[in-house]
Image (tube, rainbow, N blue to C red):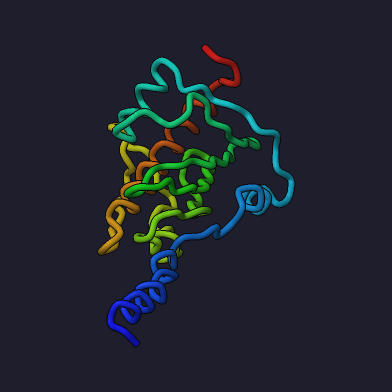
Length: 178
């Protein structure tokens, strides 16, 4: 085998490894069904305008990709499907808030080539019980993962944003634009 052909063969053989961490781990509708015991409430919308838009920008460090965010609420329990960029691509994450505390965070769709370790319970379990402190940041320290810094940051931002939006929507009906 010629050297160039051999190198090309090796390169093409290794390409699937680059996409190893990418994938859909759970469909958003399945996440919602699991967290509402099969009785998913009707979706509501919170508009990110005015103060909510500014606060979301402060939490994320940039504007959220959409002006409206869908969420599902039953009594004091809400679920959010949010996206945040890891390094280059969005990470779709499901977040469940119960009585103002983070109950569950789960990576649903991961599109990056690195940092996929954030999907495992050893990492996501750290968020259980987290609330926002008086500064609007998470009140729990979340340990990072070597080689997954940007994915860790993305999930921390998503958690804080979901807690903030839950605190706003639990107080009032914000289905319509202000």
